[in-house]
Length: 110
Length: 157
Image (cartoon, rainbow over all chains, first blue to last red; front, side):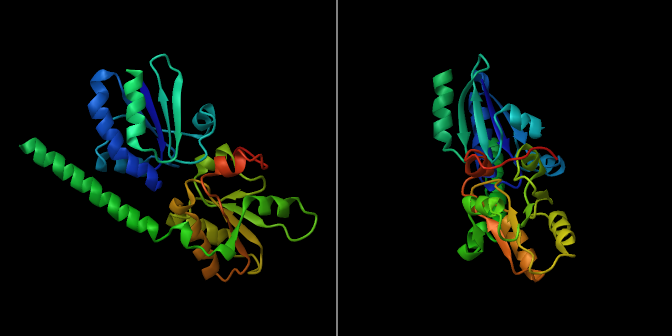
């Protein structure tokens, strides 16, 4: 399963979530969870810096308007999608989300 | 033992970074803009659709990726006002205008209390002497409070 996290370096609620995602990736990597960060920053420079400083342990790619539209419009941050093993979107979380909610969903998908 | 110490150091470093970042952003938070300087989405739509009154210059002061997905028709992208380059672009764009020009700035990147862009933009315009500035109040984000409400939207650069 994949947890897609749309975020940006200037988005404070996004940054508050990242240490929790790092922890989730560590805890559930061996049970099939892959987190992917999609940065909606306008350029990659600040993202590289944050990637190192936050010790992010999952891939982060640069997003754009087309990726946002493919996911129904990412018109506010953060937004996270949990995608199941069949590639279906299981849940969508708009705004900072209690990590226990996401962890429960991961458990349900295992 | 070494691993524990290393993990503790990482957690402490991240916590300090977050604290510094949050403090910095709080200094620019939108919540400190007085209510009298705000305009609600429905008020702006009414102003735009009315045949009377001056039409505002609308400036989006947030991220380009968000602007490209959806913005208010006729509004201009200027760059995130939380950055120096964005503020410079903003100042350059409005410099030739009359200080009484009706200007609406908006972002919608994040919940209102976390928006890093509108407050610096509002401050910059006021410091230049503009007297008819309104900041579009977007409670949650541009998607929920503008697009999903069915207000007019344009896409692209």
